[in-house]
Amino acid sequence: MSQLQSLRGMVDLLPEALQRWQAVEAMAREHFQRSGFGEIRTPLLETTDLFGRGIGEGTDVVGKEMYSFQDRGDRSCTLRPEGTASVVRAALQHGLLSQGAQKLWYAGPMFRYERPQAGRQRQFHQIGVEWLGAERARSDVEVIALAWDLLASLGVGGLQLELNSLGTAEDRHDYRNALVAWLEQRSEALDPDSQARLSTNPLRILDSKNKDTQALLEDAPTLADALADASRERFEEVQRGLTTLGIPFRLNPRLVRGLDYYSHTAFEITSDQLGAQATVCGGGRYDGLISQLGGPQTPAIGWALGMERLLLVLEAAAQADPNGPAARLAVIPIPDAYLVNRGERAETVGLSLARSLRQQGLTVELDGSGSAFGKQFKRADRSCARWALVLGDEEVERGEVRLKPLQQQGEEVTVALSGIAAIVETLRTY
Ligand code: ATP
Ligand code: MG
Image (cartoon, protein in one colour):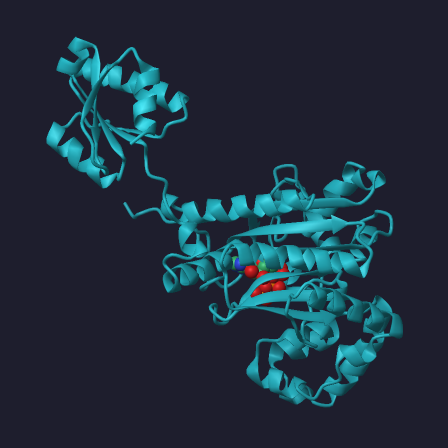
């Protein structure tokens, strides 16, 4: 029988990798809590319509990347390709916006049918924030700083913040016409994908990954020139705010987010460690989305970072600096004690002793093999536990357990099995 395999682009996360993963999530949770963001969890499965309306039919995500199917009730369902549309749907469904602005964060898997490669999977994971009701330029600065500081605290170096303004829908309308007119005269030089986008989603041509198209775009009209005064002033205020906080950035006039509902501030945080899939975090303002999904006109801003790409950067950082913060994230906690036990009665008592000690908050690894003491001691050494607890039928007969120091100098001590408090105290001191 052939070996069963996971689906292409769907990746298992194993305990060792999850160590660093958990540390990242814990750090993110801490940053969000300190900034007043509350967690939200929405279903992985939504109506297909939500993403059609919330992301836009002309985008790659909706056009060719969604996992959609009819369920048994013949409803068209889609595995969520991103978090924002679902968060807005939930906020509207539960009337959260009537209670004022909402600062929300989420973490979890997303699904996009893309060509798998390093940093690109079909099930991948994002951590993201959405601030619904955030209007002022200062909120853009705060939200960007939240992403920047989180990445910095994880020990990610070599990051670049790229910034652009997409202006308002009116700004983009004028610009789109100018860009299409300019590109139509040069359409032969465009790659086929970009040619198709001329009629469907011309702004997306700006972030084409095709080298020839990129070269052609060097001289194209830019969005910055098309911004109305108010949009331009707003953009400058965001830049001043970042400068005041000491957060460096680079203006990138070709930065357009793939999703249609963005306006004004758009940004990406990229890493020079990642090659082609360089963007770790992307976000921006989406003042049009909430009303588009049937809610009141409400300004909003958010971002999402890709866990897999962040983990790749963290691995590189940990290798470059084995004592740095990124390396420390992957440190596996060592057990307080390794319980060596053998014999019918000893193993029964061992299981219950391990349980009592764990209830006291200690980390105890119980050897469940029943193998020879020598073998168990080898494993105890390998576990790096500070103590071995030794239980054989003889010890049980005497109502005792032996505590043998493994990593540190010291005498072996014998403690009564009934004295859990005394055992805990000894394990905690050395
Ligand atoms: P890209 O241009 O790389 O496809 P995107 O614009 O589609 O990115 P967003 O929708 O903004 O990405 O998602 C935010 C982040 O999620 C990205 O910056 C990236 O880190 C991560 N991400 C997006 N798609 C994938 C994927 N298929 N596999 C792994 N991570 C992804
Ligand atoms: Mg994409």
